[in-house]
Amino acid sequence: MPRPIHFEIPADQPERAMAFYQQVFGWRFQKWEGPMPYWLVQTGGEGPGIDGGLLARQHPGQGTVNTVDVPNCEEFVRRIESTSAGIHKGVFAGNEEGWRGPSPAAKPFMIQALKIDSDAAYEIALKKGKKAAEYMKANPDKNVMFLLEQNNKFPNLTWRVIWGESVGTSNYSVFVDATTGEYLETMR
Image 1: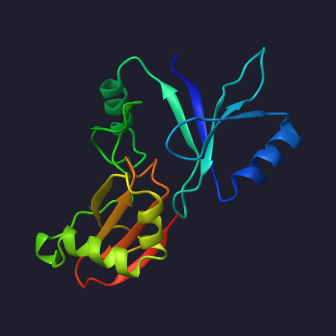
Image 2 (image 1 turned 135 degrees about the horizontal axis):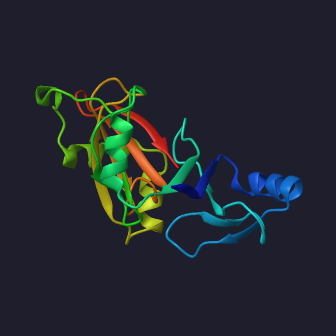
């Protein structure tokens, strides 16, 4: 029977969250030596339970992730799709850690809505993003990637200009409206 093997808790103030979990449950935390603020969580030693991770919240509404170990991802996605839970269908490659289904918050869009290209979005992000120029100077070797999306938070087609290897590991990104070129938000 597949079981949960890992969890991730996002926190607005990771140090405060760690102090809480340590005080209440006695959990131990170890800083991960990766490209983003992330701590490995040890919930105990002997007996039932799993360990996990704690990270700085990347965006409002980011929830806890529970990872379940399954022998065949595609088989279990088909099982999930066959239920009446209203889950989006399909599988796509995520980070090298595993596979996941598409986000139910993502929406399709008409290509005609795209008026601002990624180069223009990058320039807008640098000029209007909160402390973007400072971040670039402090992190000159960070990769920059672009995500074109339409979601519940930003109803218009939106560029997310991301400094880092992925959305999950980035600690700085800027949202730009892909239709009007308007600066929308900086996320740290």
